[in-house]
Amino acid sequence: MPQSLSSPLAQSRSPSPATPTMTRPLTIAIVGATGAVGAELIACLERRAFPVGELRLFASPRSAGKTLTFRGAPVMIQALEETSFAGVDVAFFSAGASLSRHYGPLAVAAGAWVVDNSSAFRMDADTPLVVPEVNGWRLGETPGRLVANPNCVAAIAAVVLAPLHARRLIVRLVGSTYQAASGAGAAAMAELRDATAAALAGETYAPQVMAHPYAFNLFSHDAGIDPETGYNGEELKVMAELRRLLGAADLPASFTCIRVPVLRAHAMALTVRFAEPVSVDDARAWLAEAPGVRLVDDREANHFPMPGEASGRDDVLVGRIRTDLSDPSGRSLSLFIAGDQLLKGAALNAVQIAESLVEAGQV
Image 1 (cartoon, rainbow, N blue to C red):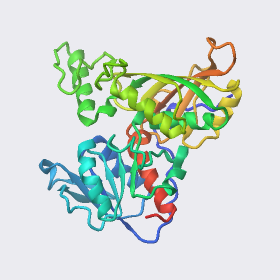
Image 2 (image 1 turned 90 degrees about the vertical axis):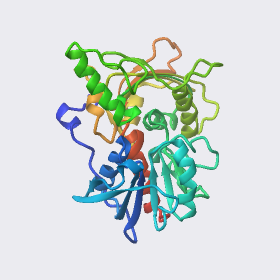
Image 3 (image 1 turned 180 degrees about the horizontal axis):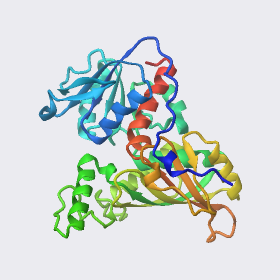
Image 4 (image 1 turned 30 degrees about the vertical axis):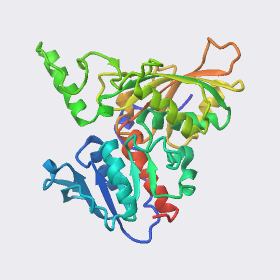
């Protein structure tokens, strides 16, 4: 029977790796340290024993002077300035595209590697877009010191799609996403809590962060709609970035991205068509041995990936693997996945990029 994920195990994180090979402690900067992803970056650096000698935390001026905890000690938050990156080895950016566009090149000019979580550089041909399990080799090809972290949906999906694509070329992809509040940041998570509490108390709650009422509701992702195609910006980003990550520039793809009232961990239903027939058993075997993937596909117990079990886990969960009955050629599979947007969809992937740079001696 395929390996199943038990609920107690789902509450724990995946084992931390060995400390990356290093020659010296590193000076690390986090831009956007007070946000949801910033908090996870700090936690990932600590639990994965990343070789941090000095940690510099940056946020807006209103947060300057406050402290956050790293390895049991307080670290003061600083206001970001153009001279903030002197002596920094790796700078993680998670504070929006406009800020990344301005300060990212300044950090690179100061000698830092930049791992950027925003959309600023993802489609820049000269900037590698990287998920280490999928295309980590690209880090050795980049002439610069700036690496883009993918959109959260693209990163999570790519971890599952890449080991399939490596064995049976993917020729068409259709996906529907169920995206948690964490994708819109800490304020959206707080709004979901507050809106739900109000709804349960029979009170009215006016949305302030999201475009629509969030409690007991779901709605289209609020990225702007492209008037020509009818797709929203999130859907277009996911499709374009998956093509880059999989090295399939002409891959036909269609996504529908929906926000659901879940605190963290995105889920998605994918239907994948391959160039050749593929069996469910082969797909399960390939995914079971893929790095960063956990097979959760217990038909007997009706136990498949859930956001509640993906939350807080490093691995992406995959299951409900079945032949697509609408394709009589036997070349299509349908499956369901769930992954923590704040981890593999953001902070964890960024730290894994930095680990790869350290292990390769590039930092």
